[in-house]
Image 1: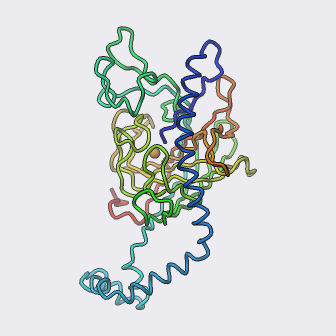
Image 2: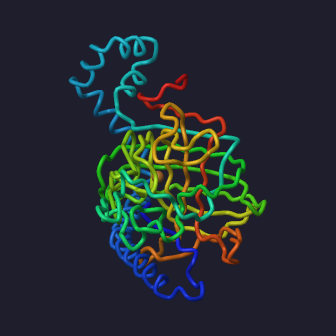
Image 3: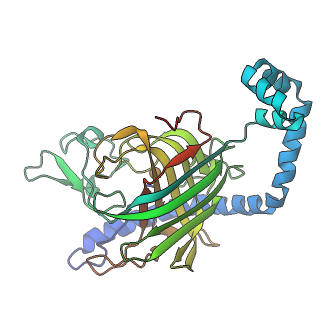
Length: 350
Ligand SMILES: [Cu+2]
């Protein structure tokens, strides 16, 4: 998400700063509004059709049975033929239908991210004399060094952070990526459930089972994207982390629980299962630290859906920051016992 969280709002002597941020946030929300209205329509559509999903699957199966071309393709494929011979006819036909199914899970080590002023990569943002990717990170959110020759950090603390605390958590996600591009009628599906311990020692649980099929600021790949490049200068997601290969990415609406009690619903939720950007000490630099390892990140920006569209809304995390404010977002990465199933590019033995 390109949403920069604001934690300095309300600090004395920072009115101009606060105003700019408010304007940025409002602009962001306006954009989200337009697309979430669409999203709500699509969600209603999807919900209405939910009971028909199995019927739809059945129809696809029947179609495939009638589709000689598909059957022939399968017969030419030795692997498929072998599998098919061992199974019953229906099973073998079913395997030829692209399901877009993928799943991932984690259990164990995780990190909680506090707001932080992220360092700025000169390769991505240039110098004050020759700035680049200004559309991705406006100049007024960049701090410079003493003599003004280089950028140092962002001005407003963000969700992508080296200010972290070790914790533990479990995570599981099942997706169906059937629609490639944003579409109010996207067929993409997500089912995610994550639990982790907050810095205050409470157990936070986040669930997500509805996609946002159209992205407000950049494409959402229909709600679920698989095997896509993101972040960096791609324009998909924040530029505050390096460009990375994402096996699964999803945006949707979900619920949040604290110590078993549901404290909010219709939260905007973003999830990625990607190559590992953080090093062995869980610090994030300017590149991808471990391209052959997995990393899962779960982010809830301070925005939620409502019947009238999205609204700016701090996440009720129950975590108090040093400035006395409640941390208005959730950003947790998972590293324990990571697994990814159903991705043809990922080999668990890597
Ligand atoms: Cu992401």
